[in-house]
Length: 279
Image (cartoon, rainbow, N blue to C red; front, top):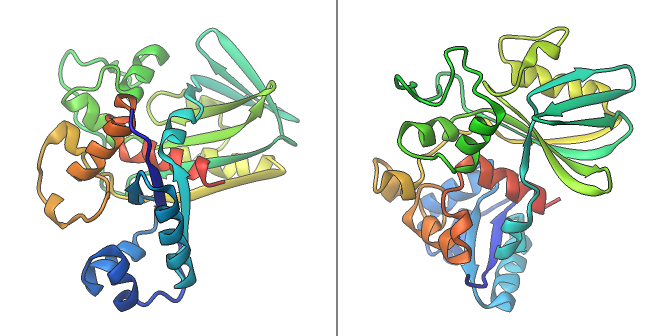
């Protein structure tokens, strides 16, 4: 495991001059504009020299580019997803169930959320006959967690993970930091009294309505998921992605250098972890 300090984009940015920021990125002004227009968090720079990264982030902030400095190894310390298989919204609390356990979360609990979903028209990968998903689209929690975490990530399964909408809730429950996750096609959403066709959007609205202190990061909403270079190898459009954008070989190599545990992170999972660390 290598020690890296990361400079992470924290959009939105204000009053950015692409001609000025281009010098820091080592890009053309047009490429720098695309970088600062991307609405979701992403890793921009990485180096073993922490001071250098802090100076880079400070210089960017002085020019209206919002960025945060993180330790690369902190990506390993984000709470693991606890998949909600079913849930109930009570009068004063949310009861979230996962396989073999139940978590009660009072509505006055203070926590943060990350919501991610692909744009309209981007669907999950078509399932193959004999795949792990059930005909009803609700595989068991243990199977789905394998699919999401990468344990069973090969071929079409990884493609499904990369396009799966989710809501992660981060907070201190029962004296420890946890991540409670509602996942499309894995969570039973019959606990919703009223809902739209987009059940994850309905969950977000219901949580915002019921919880007194909840901030949800929506910057991964309607972000088109990219294929991981680790899984797909070089693919169409990859050469246009600069620095450590998701889908580049550079990012895959960086994550694996930080820890082999990180090499198969999907774009949404990486975005959720970055959001949590920037709170």
